[in-house]
Length: 599
Image (cartoon, rainbow, N blue to C red; front, side, top):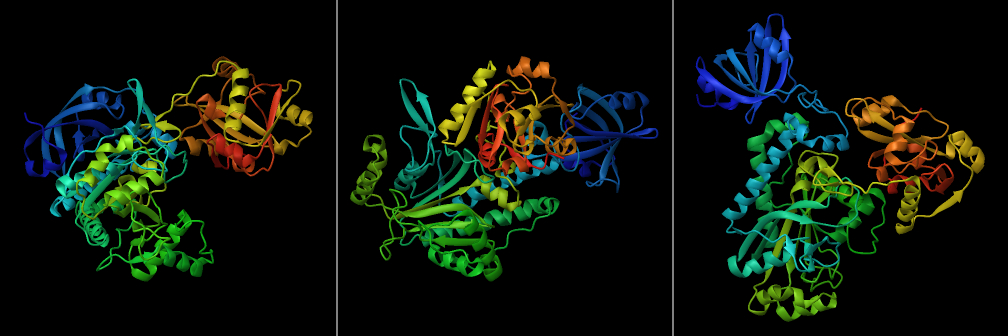
């Protein structure tokens, strides 16, 4: 019998069908059981009345793979208007172990780190899944729009012999006897493709080795790029981009309007005509009038606060969630024209969307001599750019281009708080492709001390190191240092009761841990790790545990009182040495999640 998908069932009323999927949920009500099966179409309810089948299903956990053969019946009790009755249920892959996250509920209420730790399971949740289904629509509509406007798609290299842009950090990779770089941008290649296709676009991963640890930055992102030749003004590229945005918004509204209702967010507001446009200078003046923030900047640019404020202005005054900001600082990069009418500006443009820059573009320098001059001014080596300059030496028309960040666009469509929520398997300072970075195992307490000092020195963090008699408690340490208990950081290692995942909680020496707050943060109840286990696993004795849980391979949760201290002291890996430093610096170098974790 051929398999039927849940979305097709309404066309099979009163007929026998076969469903293959995962056990999403199961509940018993008297002599009946209700099996919820998930497949690529969604959820379908199967009504079970066989005693043996009920018993077998009751022993299974979500994720079990099942095959159901039964009759389709009309009903008002399900969203799809049908259910399956009189079933025969075959268990293909039985799962007995309780999943570490309850993904079969309407929402998964865990913090972002827990969500990413269990991303393969979290993606089974229909609400989380919906984000990435919409993301797929964005990619589809981006390509559709550009093809309809005369663009041809190509694939840009990811490994390059030289950095693709100046002024940004890059990832070096070994390449046989030499080295290469992960692409920061397809900039070089999409400009070359203008001389082949005239209008070209590509979608692919790009990499930025910038040590940001914010809610809007990741190290690997999906960039959607377009480049076009034979322009009179870069406004032509902006018009193309507006057409793309409208097609994307129309597409997600048509296919996914219910998803936005599920997240409780409004659909993007588009103006009737062209998107509003202002110069950077105008934006800064508007911001100064609105919130009193000086319009003076070291460079002609917007910071994150500026972006949020000018986006509010655009929505209030222009009725648009989208705003063009143009003419950023001069000498922006080697391939962008400066503004011939204003020497301090460049012919550049950003598109702000709900307080975040999500598209950037410029009018490119197409004249070979001028481009080569700017290239040399920026200290780049021409040996690596031979192919690039061929395109200009033998005839490049006036051209412009732009790039979207897929994850940023998705993030703002859903008003998500963290770009990682809009990234399937994010890479950042803590993770590579979604998985926690495997850190070097420290074999002894002396290695821990040395590693802490090395990190603080490499980041130029101010601290004082001292050696003293051995201490085992916070009270003993405070008395020996001559400091108050409240100025001491107490580092506690806990273990999740369900997953056995170790975490560190750092609280003031005079406080007790709030297990309720910790449970809410990590998504499960936790208990103190045994001293003998800490010694065996980390080589550290109780009393010497430092607040650097990140060095020990665990997440750090730090009480806000610690992060706010001007001077905080703690044992630095051994019972016989201490470090005193600023609380704010401690929170940063330990990559801590700061909150209220003490009582």
